[in-house]
Image (cartoon, rainbow, N blue to C red; front, side, top):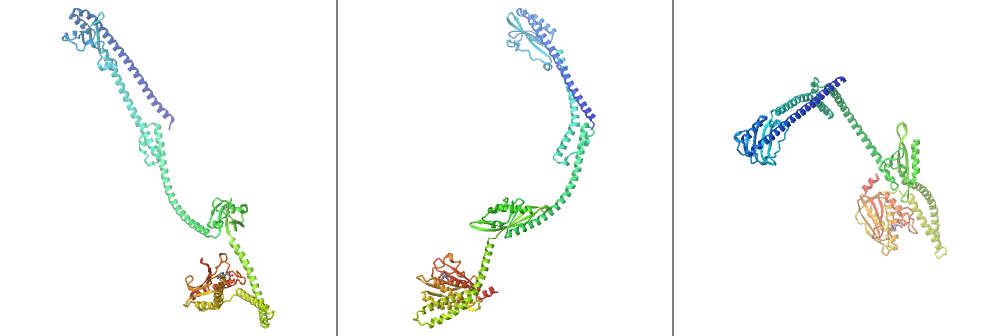
Length: 636
Ligand code: ADP
């Protein structure tokens, strides 16, 4: 764009505008001057008419007295000579026409020239008025005699000079106006054509651009206007066209790129979906694995802040803390917080895993927790977090202790069994000699009773040793097919005499139906006799002593249930877990081995020996034994 052409074009336009303004001002001044001149002329004509009318009134006054009509005509004629009279009349105060420019009207009554018309205002005058009214003047002059009003002179005249001048001014003004209207209209048309239209087109195009409607931008108009539009506008249009073309080309290029990008994006999206699905699968799998772990697993930031925990953590730390996101690892076990914090910091510093065992008091019990802190490594193998596993070792430690104790007991038992065996040999010899001594000493001998006591106590000791040995080295058993009902009935008959002596009534509800079973009959009967005699012992102090033995079918496992119910005091709740322990007895002469051996025998028969104590009192021992087919299955 050339700077000079802009300036020139703008200056030219400025000159036109200034000239137009000056012309308007000059035209205005001419109009105002002419208007003043016409107004002045108008005033002069009006004043002259007024003076002539008044002079006519003065001249007519003497004629009123004499009623000399000729005189009136003279006055009227003088007025007609002096002015371009349209109508002139002399009337008395009653409106009677005394003299008139139209002689035919003399003697008539002028309806408007009464007293009331005296003092009537002269009409407003002015340029337009003069033009409008054809410069007509109306004057009323009073005819006075002394102070009395006796009539009027009414004068209607016109001035062609004034009206011609007025017409000239109006014509000139109209001509000027028409000329400037023409110039203005042409200028406006040109302006609209060459400036406004292109500008509007540019504005619309710019708006379309702003609204991102690049296709809607109309460039055709701009091409046409290049020939006639102002230089700067042309330059602007060219620049705009150039810009739009550039934008369109860029957009087309962008569209191509966008297409490529979209296909690339779709491909990428597919890949991302695939990888995401893989990752999700891996994540779910990992989460399932971590969730299924018995060990509690926590992941922490390098500062020891917990990020994630699995379900097992809560189980292991139940009652100590609530592991959750944001908590510091040290706060997991408040009683050893300082130690935990320090250990974690050491692992993070040296990058070496560390195991530690901490004790935490929970509900009055000491829990042993095994913790292992393993560093997670980021770039350049520097620890950027840690994984902590938690395991409650309390039960395991307890079991370990029990196992150790059991080991010691087994060795002790083996030692005791060996000792018992050795002792048994010696005691059998003592038993033999004591037997001989009792038999040889006369019954009235003072030593006979002592010898019998030695014999009796030794017999009991031998019996205890035998039972102990039976417990320590249980019989393997000789399993055969048998009838449980028959075995139970026979066992009851063995101890019936002893029970009867103890005052116990035995109620046999075993029934006659055969109950097939695979068993060692001797061992089973030993159990039945033990349970029956125990019941007898328990009921020793009871007023009513009754033992009921029932044999029924059992469902779980399918087989038989032999139940011994007595009317004794039952087993106190605190002892129920202990009566099956070896050597547990509440009797002064008991060995505490009866139920332990019985339980072992029933277990060897794939059965169960259980105790229940109904609220009605008494003890109920139930022996559940499998049918032969079930026994075979369980043996296999
Ligand atoms: P022992 O008969 O030598 O004491 P057991 O093992 O047979 O040894 O019995 C252990 C303990 O079980 C007995 O001392 C007794 O306290 C309790 N007991 C066994 N049978 C009964 C029963 N029918 N009623 C009440 N207590 C019983």
